[in-house]
Length: 225
Image (cartoon, rainbow, N blue to C red; front, side, top):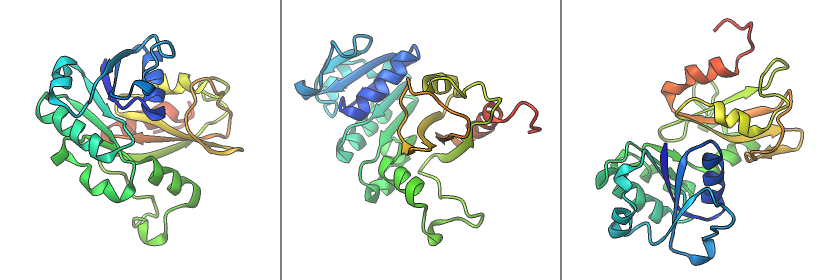
């Protein structure tokens, strides 16, 4: 897939590294020269420009990309990029990062967002648990806008146990992203080269229609789905 990422900070660069390592064509867009590190990510294309400018996105030929990820540290920027990507260039899939959980209500289809990810809220829920009034009738965490949180404990027969996290990330169905691993050291963000262990809890953000495929992928071989 061709994937454009707006924002070359630590989050954007980490996403670019993961996606490029999985064989995708990745373009990073950022106007800050300090964020540009061609030598650090030689497999990624770079565009030094303002992703909120229509002319920039035209120069990038954004309409030819399969996915746009608005990953900057500014929610206003992410909303503008999402809106332009969807409405002006007709990008099929737009994913946006939410930096301030109070802005979650804005990240929806009216702003061109197909999938919104809120790292602060996700990590807080994983570490502290949601308050009782935030749980649904079955006691589950409420989903992020446009997605569901799913988790699985790595069993002894899992093909991913004992291998790098990149092996799991590269095997996930479309519409699913690995967002955290919970192990003896607590909650940690994904790290492609870190080894997964039996008993680790892996946490995903998934589009609802991808949950069945994800469940089948992570289930023990003898489990009847």
